Image 1 (cartoon, each protein chain N blue to C red):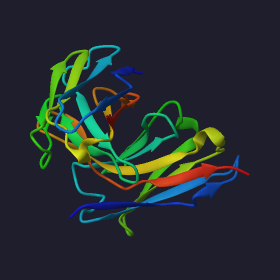
Image 2: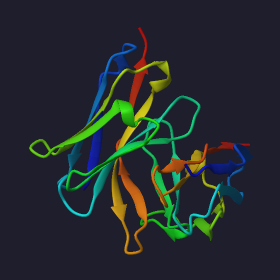
Image 3: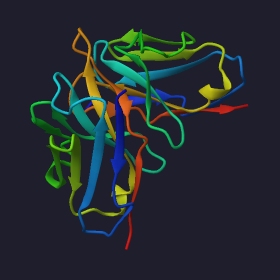
Length: 107
Length: 123
């Protein structure tokens, strides 16, 4: 299975801050990497697919980059609704696997 | 508008079978090229893919769970189901159903998700 290592596991930030989350794959996965947001009581929300393509309806404050083994999710100007947990997920090969998540908390 | 809604028992005893259903509205479960999937999130842990089924009924299972899992579709009710046999406390999790979409580049993405169903395994 492809392992995805996310960092940091948690971070504290303020409204308006810029944050970056990284995801490293245990082997090359080209651009087959998605990012999701998870809030309590809700299903995951797709933010970015194919490493850098913004899903319809997702604010442009979210962006993704990378290919191969190293990927990043950046949120510019954090909003109150952005405080949540973020996961990366590879769709290169079955079984689909996820990173362990990054919890973004209010400082 | 596509919507998915999980339903299940909430509490299951160890060694029994967990049966979950995902009711789909706004699209047929037999519509190409979509697939349908089950994922779970144990407490304090990340998400885990369990199984998927294509519009034509072809199934894929996570090897770590394959011996205990069966996924099926009921086209008459426009829903799909998951059976997880011989459960233990480690199967306690929030279970999600989802639709798997594909873009022109062959990338898989899960846009539509249910809100999740908490399942606890306990005697």
